[in-house]
Amino acid sequence: MALKMAIPNKGRLNEKSVQMLNQAGLEFDDADERKLYANVKRRDLSVMFLRASDIVRFVHSGAVDMGITGKDLVLEQDADVKLLDELNFGHCRLSVAAPEGSGIDTVDDVKDGMTVATSFPSMTKRYFAKLGKKVQIEQISGAAEITPHLGVAQIIVDLVSSGSTLKMNRLKEIAVIAESQAVVIANKKAYKEQKEQMEEIVSAIRSVLDAENKKYLMADVPTSKLDDIRKFFPGIAGPTVMNIMDRTDIVAIHVVIDKDKVYDAIVRLKKMGATGILITPIDRMVP
Ligand code: AMP
View 1 (cartoon, protein in one colour):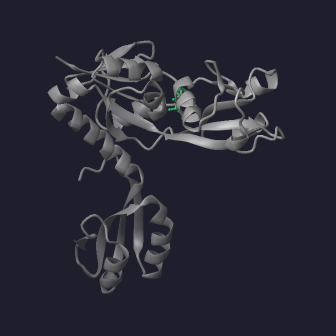
View 2: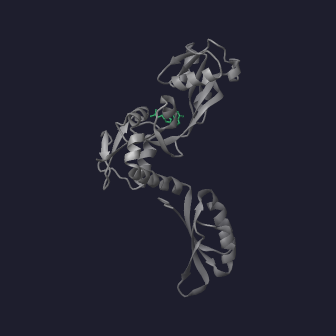
């Protein structure tokens, strides 16, 4: 039976999830945006498009075998699922925020009986209970930032990434409850039964993520500078050095380098007398 994998159908995690799977070589056979599921070409894998929060529930119950969703949603539902990997996108944190000038500057200023508006009631309850504070929870489904200004709540617990939405609404972050990012999760029973196929998918995704921070650099360098090159470019297994036909004074080098080292590398190579420097992206890196 085909493995069922759920990915977010819209919202912040959708685009990157689809792009990452395609780049990993898992292409959908019919990319109609209105479709709720798709088969993956040449693979025994079906992809379901669902709301990020429903993905946690359905992976937990076994309705789907695995899925991509936000770690915050897994924590909120306290789902008993297997965390297969963290995907290094969709970074955010679940934070406590209070209106600027309210006198609530730290969680110590939060008093018993205060109301907290949030769409994360379980984590909020657990957090304040641990601090020994008896707060009222006002569960909302979004736009928590407006609630203190409506007099509905004194403070909020919401997801924050840059902090600009809080600032725009004259709120300040006073504590972080949990850090989050996109994750791959699996149903525990399904994982036991189809471990190999799931690990294969995760490793394909990982190869895309690993490649994102790297570039492939090619250059023709003076043969006399090879010792310097060796010191500067460790590469995956050291730089590849190739002969250029009819030339003994220069060789071609190919090397994988960190994206943030490209600028310095070019400056250094030019100083060494390198020519024909090419930088290209890498689709996937499989160790
Ligand atoms: P969606 O509601 O479908 O846009 O997905 C929301 C998920 O995106 C959250 O559960 C988080 O995992 C993630 N996310 C990343 N940054 C933010 C942010 N600033 N606000 C809300 N959700 C975020």
